[in-house]
Image (cartoon, rainbow over all chains, first blue to last red; front, side, top):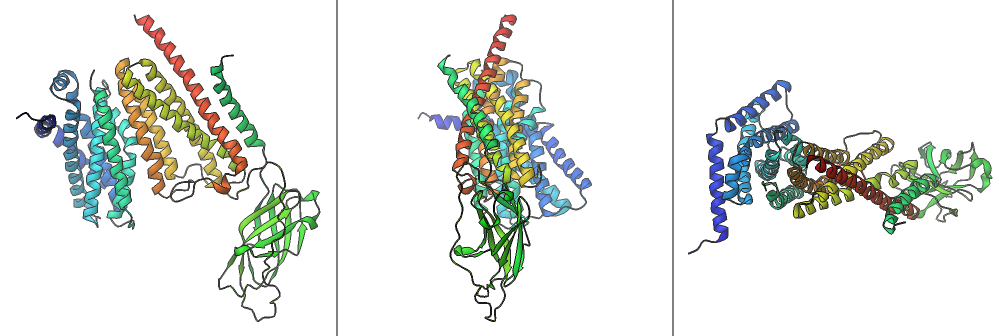
Length: 225
Length: 354
């Protein structure tokens, strides 16, 4: 029986994703670097603030997550250029390659966020009053951040020699996500009371969907021609 | 003269028209201050008010009407007006007891009207504390007939108490933003055209439109800051609308930096076109969705109504809409000039390289 186009694509996507995860795991620098980045940022934060109120905790949490994710995304797209890039170009469709990266980045976001949560909680306790809502916010934010960092990381990898460009490109664009997420996190920590937060979650998911649609539409133009 | 120039001259003419009429047409009279702001029911008070855009030295004091307006159209007419100076006067009121009202303070609107300048009003001008009656002053209850409101002919803009003369900024600040959004949209459209056809002309058009849209955005932010100084109290107050507008400009600064950091022409065009489309789509949640859900002082955000109704009356529409069209046309003209300059520059460069 002939396998469908969809099935082949999913298989290729899965193989690429596995390869991504393995390369993250095996790489001497990427995962330990991220862990070190998160912990040292948390240390700097605690050296600067003696006491952290609930709202600042949430803001710091998201800032550390975003900074670490930006740092991790910079190294994630090294293999799109040069010989390796041509190899993947011949092997698979750009969408498959891109979404393998997105899935890997999503998991990386989860690791970074868990680490940040753990290290912040260890030093300052946790202000989260509504764990389910907090988890929901996190997952919807990770989707958006993973997509945004993957798309712009891909773009950044194409810019020759200017690795420092990624924060410049991403930070203004991730602001709609960050504003929604900080507002929702304050609700989850009980520092703001708002019963109609469902609309805010929908907006967050709508922004995710917008970024997803744009990435799907534009990613093929970033691949070398 | 080529007929394709007409829209360019139309744009300039409309902007000149909006500048001239937007600045020259006078405001309707208004009341800027009253004292005292609170009184007891049953008292006879002398309410001193300062009017704006009136000249009392030229008219007879007996022609001036003043009254306090309550809910449901009830009112108290002033017994007498004493003119103090060209724009100041005292209105003598015998206040009713208002004993039938079960409120601690009853708010009233001061209306002043004269045949030469027309009417002016100040909402919540005087608060009156009702006094429990023993029945002796029952004659001073609220009247139900409204005195004649003088309406004068002539073109004028409405007087709004917080805005005052800054209401004219509606013709500059708002059209600048409208024009900016339209030019960014055209820029994104040219970027999409580039990605489909791969012609460097479209790419250069996209840059030129984005550049002038950014200039308009900066002007919009500056006019907004000046307006905020006079209405909100500070040039910059980290209002969500100011914040997201500034971030929108940062996105386009990043676009120009991205352009300058790729050497190869085709690669630069491809990468920046993708980024331009991405950036324009992300402006929608940034400028139009997120600010609406957050507390904001800006009209149309955080539960505030947008400008409209009494704030944008018929006379203002006659200046406002031409200004919007004028700025869009001027923006298109400037952007096309820049694009043609870039295309010629590119041709010269190519000639020297080959």
